[in-house]
Image (cartoon, rainbow, N blue to C red; front, side, top):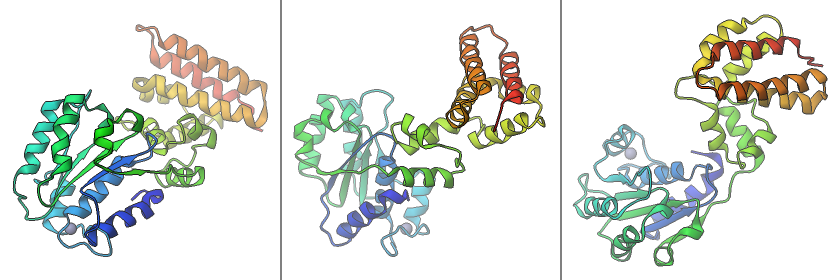
Length: 295
Ligand SMILES: [Zn+2]
């Protein structure tokens, strides 16, 4: 559970337990603060057969199916582009079936603002007269783009983003303790955006990068080896290098940080060339780091 949403979560699930929760929630707020994670957390609780202390039990059949991504009464409308009418109809038809686990049914609509007008209209009737034990959770970071007809039929929650301290401490828990306030700020104070940007599918983690860079700076790292390992992520690595020297320059105003920063910009330009030798560009740039004045 994202720490900054703990109190929202408890407010919502305690109302659910008291049968006083609206069947359609709209979670609005800045992009990258974890609204969808919160929605999924609530959904898991709604579906759990044996909740304990306002938390899903993690053990019942429902929780296990949910964790496996195969819960028959949980649906999420994912779309690369706009959410069209066919997708909404499909979601609604799933909700209209009898619950397969004899409990609640939940439909989450992320990026709800991207519903076409036809899709939104198709959803209206369900929002007005849902089938029994059915909950809809709409999520949006663009509240102003939501149709008034949808808004008026949902219980709206505008979620307050985490404080800088909360974001940085959460990122630290995720192994990203090096993230600075300036960097967080550059990502719109959205910690999940920072996390997505710093961790990659292929596995280079920002923390590993910084550890390797520290070795190079100390004259103990082999830049050719790292350049070889990182060449598939060259652009990202150069951005990280740039960020690193930028922070150093803010701290010590040294000429060496300034010139390595310029080398990062040159490396970015070289990488625009499709035929470039990425390993060479990276190793040349990384070699500059051994000349940095770290005082
Ligand atoms: Zn459970």
